[in-house]
Image (cartoon, rainbow, N blue to C red; front, side):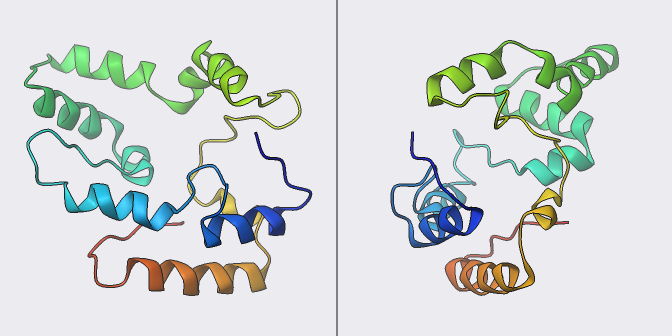
Length: 146
């Protein structure tokens, strides 16, 4: 697992698509975005799940051809909240797999939209925005960052 001395070092690698987790992010997300209308692809965004978790659960069920009662949907949604998922052992497995010491640098952080604001400087935000808009220009894909 690559480690970075500064957030700027990670950001430089991420935006240039070299040896970062999710390297070449624009190519990755636009590849799947182009397939979003195929029968075997369900394209979800974290921000949308945060806005309407029960709606997302229903969408996944529809995609899988499953029907749930209102109670089942509510129970699954409750089990899939950030707080509940953070408690689960799967995070420990993911951290071990990627070599992340969850006590030093938690793989699962706060689960809030807009947390990036605590890490980016104004200059980094401007650089990222330019890169982001150029990378996704003409694709119809966008993300909400707040």
